[in-house]
Length: 243
Image (cartoon, rainbow, N blue to C red):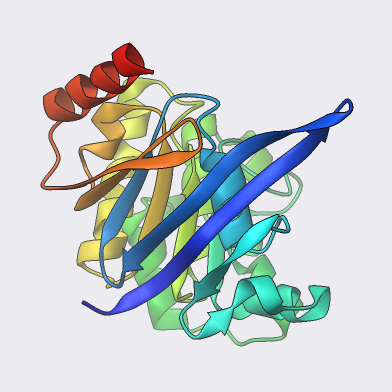
């Protein structure tokens, strides 16, 4: 299967006092193109450091990461900026919008910064799928959190990057608004042929994915196809009991 991103023995540690704390240890994984992959693990398991290293937002301690044929871990800051501008879309748990700009302006902001034209037909399809069409001229800061998050995710998808990374995108939402966001993410994969990696602590969210990578104590602890909420919850409990 075509590989959109991968890591090889990736390790990330942080200085704490006189020593270091290992957040991610020797993780080797592949993200398959055209799939929704979930990175599932409890809080503190290393999900955010791992996806940050994959996107070039943090430097690795050792090992390597690639987005397509681009070796993220061998790039300069200027090259990493260009990579994220053209090949990686990112959305975080808390929406990073400009509240005084309209929804349309927020969606198009990365394209404007990059000096790239916006494909009007593609923009309209994406806005419709995100149920934002009637809100495009509204100030983004006036939207509820669930719609602000849809703006963040749609903005990450708009440039048609090789990989979309979503770090706990439903973590700040109630269940029903979160379901709507997950349906939109699934549409981006199934209908728009995007490749999405979603980091989450929630087995219900992860069960929406085509494939789940389990992360526990900074290490890869499972690779599950056709996941179910019950099966994922059971696996997490087993890992906790044996830790």
